[in-house]
Image (tube, rainbow, N blue to C red; front, side):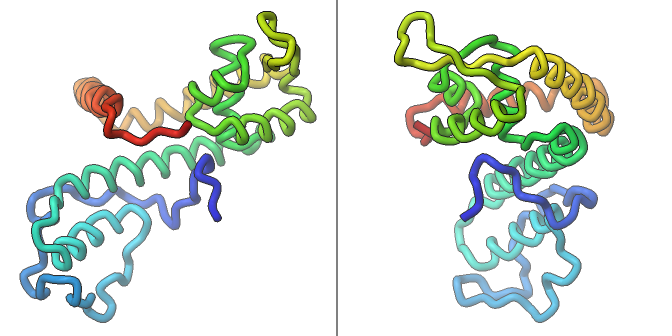
Length: 214
């Protein structure tokens, strides 16, 4: 079973699919309903990102009443995030000797300082079991050290070693250069708009209806 904390490698990182009302509507040549079959060769040439257009068109044809706009929004959000994450991991973090999940742990420690595993799990969005496993690996690499928590000797606090501090600082600068290349695809106004919209989704995600990792 794939690790939910690890980004999957996309089959292709070609241009993103175009978004628009026409792409979101059902194909009039296709009968609607669960029995509607794809035409032979219809998926030829579809890759990881262009699958969004294909998925919306096919799902709309097979699912009467489908909210195609919501489907497109979530598919694009998920798949573009996956591509960006994979790019950052393969270009910056794997060469440093850690995974994207490992960086998520290191990132918390670099920014927040010595922290208990439970809090690292909350801030990184990973499970406590994943944090414990990653800490074992990073400790062997000399990047992380364990020490008893000040308030409770039974609890364990993780901190970066001197080597870890230097490694994460260097990786941060390298990642930010990569982030700038991604941001260059938008104008300054578009970046601000996107940040604002993603902020609204993040605020929406605080609702009681959203399921979260314990």
